[in-house]
Length: 221
View 1 (cartoon, rainbow, N blue to C red):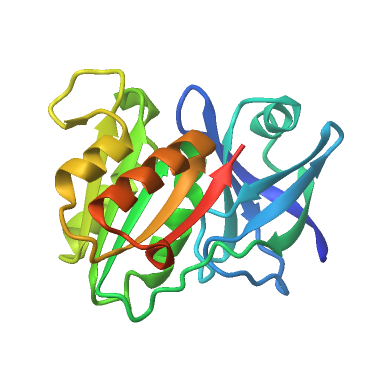
View 2 (cartoon, rainbow, N blue to C red):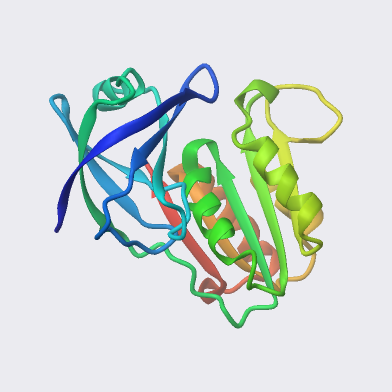
C-alpha cells in the first residue's frame, strides 16, 4: 500500500463536532469515488473516507471529533503535513446500468457518498436521491453543496431528516423516511453510516422488496 506525506491546505469547522480537511493531492495519487485512506498520527492510525471526487485537485476528509486520532486531526494546523496510506476499499459505484440510485447517509457517512455523487452526476442520466439523517439542523453537513446540485440537476433530489428537532422537513430516522417515500424497489441503494443505521435501513429495504444485489453499504465504527 502506498504511503504519502501531504500538506494540509485547509482545516474548516463544519459543525461543532465535524471538521473538513483539505489536503494537497499527490501527483501520482488516484482513487475511486467511495474509497478511503488510512491517516497516521502520533496517536495512532484510522481510516477516513475521501469526500472529494477523483477529478478534483485536492483530497477532502470529513472528520468527527471523537477519539484521539480524530481530535489530533481536527486541531491540525494549515500548512502542516500528515501521512496517508491508500487508497483502500471496495465501496465504489457499481450501478452504471441502473435507472435509479438512492444514497442514504448519517453523520460523516456522507463523505463517500458525496464523492460518488460528485463523480457521477454529470454522466448518470437516471434519477438520484440523497437522504441524509442527523439529529438537529446544526448537524447537517454539506447542505449548501447538495442544495446547489438539486437546483442544477433535475434528476437529483436532496432530502434531510432530523431525529431530535422539530422543523418543516422530514422527522425521524432514515429507515422510517425510506418506508414513507419509497414504495417500489426499483433503485439501487448505497448506504453509509453506523452499524445500527445500516441494519435498520437494510431491514426496511427488505420489507419494501429490495433484493440484496440492489444494496451496497459501508459500516462506520
